[in-house]
Length: 320
Image 1 (cartoon, rainbow, N blue to C red):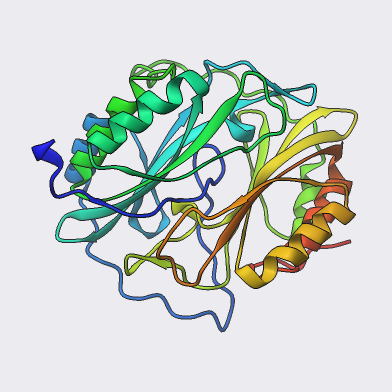
Image 2 (image 1 turned 120 degrees about the vertical axis):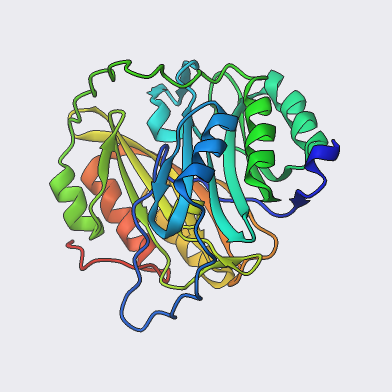
């Protein structure tokens, strides 16, 4: 416990796409970002990766991010077999906050049996939880998504989270040199979805993932926290055949946008799963909302675009 005395408890983060986020974008006229704290060097991140027992990736803005997909779970929701990249991706991201310290945010996918042992371990080791909620409707087996947030020594954060993962069935990182499994074919009109949403996504684990940044600069604990830290709207499409897709993700909204987004999603046949906060000190204040739909993929994309237009997001032109 003493080893983690410097680790302060703070608020939690939102869930971006399963492994990595797209770079943050800022439209003309967006607020200028504050000067970033000094970045940690590659040796410091190598030590963090060693403490985590897996390698992360350096993201835009100097963020170091780990993806821990729950490939061990076989989950269904409303008759759809859920791929890890759709909504079963645990993750942890760290951004430097000065003096060799970091602000850390993440989201852990936990079974009901894993939930309380993980919470106890994180609490005992100085990492806080700020949201415990659902991303899916009627999933089997029952799961809980738990947002975490810490501030302090990155090795302390990584050690605490690694210890928590050891209490779960989360698969270990692949051994060095292990060939990657062939990517499943993506049977979706991704070009049309890109055209509708106005932002290009990427294929990851058989899922088409899109990250939509907010137009504002978002800060937590005085540090800029962009989409790689979980503050961009995450939209994931999993093909289910015949041009259809299951969609799951997380809208990031200011309080004044919430009701309009809910109404627009429902008008377009997209269900709301949960509405909550992930942070306690963010500026501007944000609300996070998970959604679900299963229909023609382009029809769903049009509904999502309509909802995005009710927010202050950095959108491309899009096409109806």
